[in-house]
Length: 553
Image (cartoon, rainbow, N blue to C red; front, side, top):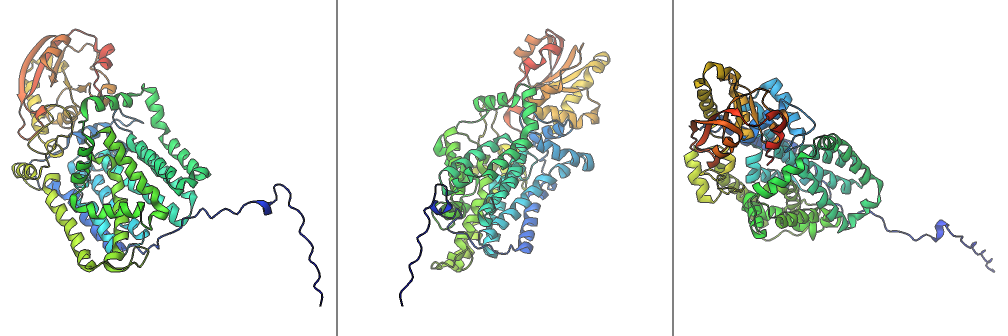
């Protein structure tokens, strides 16, 4: 039989889809197999974390409000779209707590402890999404509990507790974008990143790290899609009110950051920055987060999530180049490194989990017991210097033996026998009592029209918090946002001043009288032997010159 010839296909014209090259799928080459989160076990562990962060405040030993907590309470009572030294989110979260529960330590430390517990849950969930089973989820979440930086900052109210939670959430969403192949999740990332910016401006460095991670890996494909940019638009829209506040107030936060970099932050060489990372994130957690970093950069997990590994390395390099002593600047990345490390190690130690069967290492089951035990031991060893669980004298000796009494801010007075995060919790009520005694000695006519001027937001916050107890005069300060809350009223001629030098005060007032000295045994040294003076007869018009007296740092 003769085969009938087939007709030749018509020539393709320009633009015909038949001539377009076939592009490879943009999806990742390897996606880990998610596991079911062990919610009951994770919740029990997170409850233990909450107790560790929250309950030490009930032990006593004289530890009170942290200096920053006194300031945040003052900010929460004067809500705005911005403050000189931080965006508005943290005071906005604190305001309803103060309104409903009051301003006690138990009330204001509830939110940071909850943020710590939520970070633990989110870390365990991320480990499950990366393929870790019960062992890996609990080890990753438990590691958060043992990190010295987290032990400190989930135990006091500040922007940092919320920063850690928000960063962990942002990175968890990046994992979900790859696991689901769902670019629309960039909108959720943008919303969370916008909230993180409203909490702390340094979230901008997270964007820098992410940009580097995207450009250096195949995840750069997201840069050509619309969803990443729409997510960036959502973040910008959420942050816009604070941006407008900065413009309206002539960018005070930029001045604050410049001054802090020049006068407050302690310069640290790059090697010192790396040592701080090891010390303040716990040497015993290094095998876990180190495995996580390896898995993201060189393991199978990195085929879809390598940009997260580069994100961390970029932030670490930026921290080293900037030579900043504060180890918490990039702390929000570590929970995801813990999750990735747990997903990487579990199949190699137990023969299951991690998204791939793998071959179990010799002695793997022994290591699966030893690693969490080692991490827990490290957390127990660093607990006394990070939390008020022992009397101050015992804590000072213990922290000194461990080398955990670092100077993290520049200045001769920024030292103490205790770590700064504990030393800044002493002496506040005694200070208010000392000032009240000076006010009480004023002649009746002066007492009625006097004001108090403090050179630190901590002193001003303490005087406001307990001022009603002694019927103190109004409190003013030229430190950070207090200067925006206004000068003393026109016609003020008498003031009780805390902390300023006598030479400076004689330039501003005709009469300067030394009235008292505030002593504080366990305080930072700049707050010990603090002079309290009475000044009379201002030489300048404070109504017009108040802002010129500001110090943003």
